[in-house]
Structure formats: structure tokens, C-alpha cells
Length: 290
Image (cartoon, rainbow, N blue to C red; front, side, top):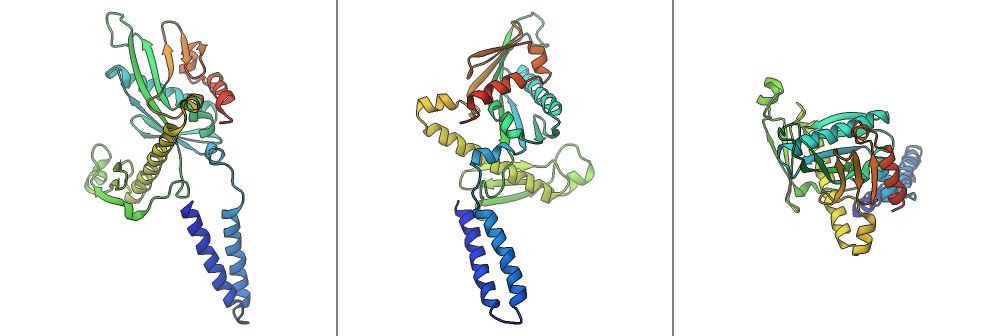
């Protein structure tokens, strides 16, 4: 909020200066146009805004998945989940863009509002394709659903950032490897470090790294607020924490159990093909007003 107040104070100062210029007959017309423009900018900042949650619901998202317990099977499970979310997004008419080995960006109308309750630990019980004896394994993967954020949402002081540039590794051709296009940002107050080397262009990598840093800082703040809630309220909200087990996928019993809803959903094969609508509707019906 301090950042927004600074913007408004700066506009007030410019409006006052323009009004002084308007007293000069030769400058009056130009000054009045400037005053009108500045007051429109100020009005856009101070108008009644939607709640932060409502504002975020319309944002695009990054889904980031990490294999957790279960070794190689956990990584395979993470890939399966990513494919499920990609299929669901495509069925909604949203755009899916790869953002890394186990990360995608989903762009479209109301994306975060629909998928925000997918954050957490997803547990699978199945016989892995690599298992020759037919033994059932239990593995987990963590899903993080992070809305795209703006500087007004999470303001980062440039003085708090240490920037390092280096040559990208891996595939991408000679240019990627010879030019210092990769970016590492260190947020000194929190100790968070993010890197980006996906683009050939250093400014694009820096912009992506800043977006990722805002998302991590936002996520940390959400988790801090949730941790401060009472146990009853925390249980009611039941969303957003990476370490919270939210769902179990039992392939042998053809069943998905959402633990927050205490509800089972069947036809697991269809669900894994992206048919998440029933689960998502049940979650938004229960938690949507929170």
C-alpha cells in the first residue's frame, strides 16, 4: 500500500505544479490538458478496487510441479499431473506455454480463480510402469499455482536486489552459450534466489526472473498469513500450502479422493485426461466465497 500511496502523492505534486503553470496565459491551455490527464491517472488509482482475491482470480498463472516422495516414480507422476492440467486448460480454450521441465503458463479468462485450489501435495497409489513385480507404490508431487503479479501487488525495492548475469548452459545454440543472457536475482531481505535462462535475450530473462521472485514472495506472505490463522479457520480455508496433502489418486480402485472435501470422484482415467470440471466445481462451491 505504501507504493500506491507514493504514486498518488507523486501525481498530486504534478497536478499542483500544472495548476501553477495554468496561471500563465501562454501556458494555460497546455497545463489544463496536463491536469486532466494527471487527474484521470489518479482517479484510476484511488477508485474503489475489487478485493485482492477477486483481482487475482482473473490473472494468468504459472503451474509449477515438483516430484516429492517416491524417487523416479514421483517425477513421472509430476509429468502426468502437468499433462492433466495442460489438457484441462486446452479444453477451456486457454493458452498453454511451457515454462520449464515441470512448469507451464496458462493464459485465459479467470484462470487463477478456477485453478487456485490445486496447490498442495497430490498423492498417487499405483503400480509404476517401471515396477516388474506388480507392487503398488505410493508417491507424491507438489503443485504450486502462482498468479501473475504486478509491481503494485508485490513491490520489490531495486536496492534489495543483487543481479548476476552469466552464460546459459544446455541446449539453445552458440548464441545462448556464448552471451551472458542468463539472469540470477538474489532478494537480499529474504535470501530468495531465482534464475532464468530460457530466453536468448537478457532483458526477457530478467523480466521472467522478477515475475518469479514476486510470485515466491507472494506465496511466502500467503503462507505466513495462513500460519497465523486459528486452527479452525486454517482447516476451513485448507488451500495454498505446498506441504498440505490435498488429494489421493488411487488407480487400483479407480478413485480420486479430495481430502478437503472428504469426497470421492470416479473414472480416474478420464480425470487424468483433463476432466477436472466436477472436482473444481465442488471446490469452488465450498471455498469460492472465502
